[in-house]
Image 1 (cartoon, rainbow, N blue to C red):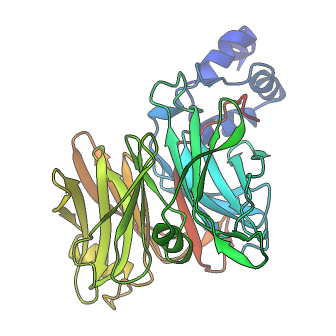
Image 2 (tube, helix red, strand yellow):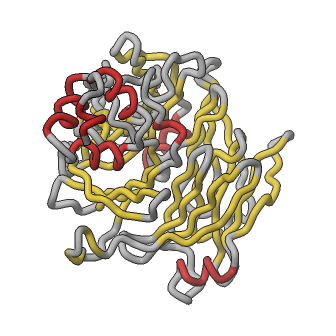
Length: 368
């Protein structure tokens, strides 16, 4: 340890910047000097290299009586427990190394940002129109200087709000939050028929391709609703095997819109939207992995899915395990990931979860 003790603190901090979050946490526990150094010279988005690591899967229990979630490190195939700022939150989207969250114990929409690896959290301002159960989407600026904490916009459409004459109405105003000015503004409108579907049949999960946000309806037969942010234009897309799918989820696949779904007695499939709004089958869940995920029943209705540019995860709950399709170079490789049954030798009760994929970082953000 003598050579390490004699290193200048700024040089030691530079070495720390090349460590993954779990390795840095271990380094901080080595001695008082290292712990002091890591906090005196905190990581910044420009010095941290953690974006080269694979995405971690975050499992947030749906009925969470404790303010915690569980994170899977794919490099060492290990689960960790992380603290959360609030117990009643639901993931909506990943923004670099941040999570956009919905506070679930609030009747009207309330959003927040969090880095679960550092414990940082902030509430976003209230919307102009208080609304319940709207669709929420996120666009990330491609010209942002930071991949860890990029500039972003949050789009809110649909939902129920109070009518001027009393009672409730479907909200047709589209509101946008811009992280650069930290305010909401009204940017467009939603046709009533789309507002109804976004409110009643659409979960919050969304995918952004270019300037267009997409949501999949949760009602059979499935369909996709798209919103062009720049043009304030809405459209509807059909879905392959729409009436037979037991679950359907949108993902980003090689830069294009992808759809993951499964049919009773059939396999899980991935389609990609091509020119002319045509869906092309590009991959299938390997039979044995699919059977393992479904517990041998070949029924897909309990399956959920989350994906990003380098990984797609299909899961059911915390303890049953999941199937992941990871991008390795130009190829996609299917793997099995064991569920989270134990943390530090202590057994965990199985529970329903919502998943998210996040590039971990311990760097500080000016957003908080």
